[in-house]
Image (cartoon, rainbow, N blue to C red; front, side, top):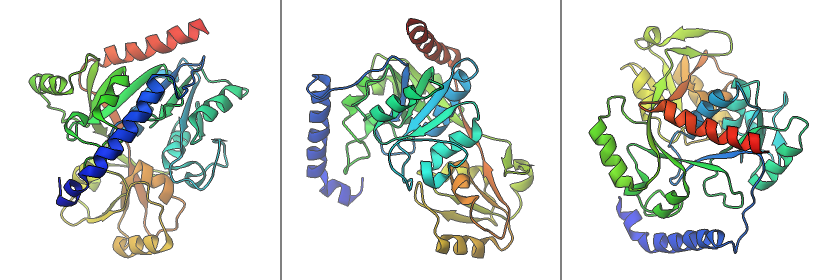
Length: 339
């Protein structure tokens, strides 16, 4: 913790009090939460970014979409539009946000919607001609106006919420006690070789009587663009530009990096300006550019003087995947039968 964050400790106490009071008002029913007949699953976190929500939402899409009509609902962070939008062929990363546009381009058999007001967004989705069987709320753990049926809380292996503090001293959006609203906790971005004893120590540190699962990030063996793919093992040794505008890009760089690479970083959800593009062009010098999937959906519309590829990632459970899947399928199946 740096000195400035320590000096801001009184503001963290005030912020924690305000968020705790808000949660108390919702818990007591003084502020109203709204439930829906359609099953609603929230994927979120207590901390500010970097826990792997996007690959976890995609995991749920792959799990559920073969048998259910799935819709995702996000706020559409940093989009250049307002209100409810249901993605269609006119959608872009600018109009609905980079992560929702990524869902839309990858999964043709689901509905993708954005609305900062999740209650209104769900209401609008239910009014559609094709009513979804299940709605996945992306990054809505603190959106108390909607009462979901299942809450999945993500926390990063290297930044556990139980070891953190509220903003601005720490990185938590609310106090650690907010984790009690979760039905499932997933410790994300674990090293593949994490031991059982380390898993047990993390469970003890979290200290909640909830199902706790452990997942890792699995990088694809290939990089892609809209027309071709290349094996990662072939491009690792060549000189290239690695570009990322995500919260924690270190593992992405480490997976692809060689000594001759140019490394370019931007803030999370960065909107690339003309000067940014010129800077990227100057660094590429006809080298191939490899970026994250989320950055690719914003970059591919820009004119660059080099091929641009992206590296997909997936969330992969290290143990008890079947148990996790069964919890999700039981919840959705029971709700769907009871409707």
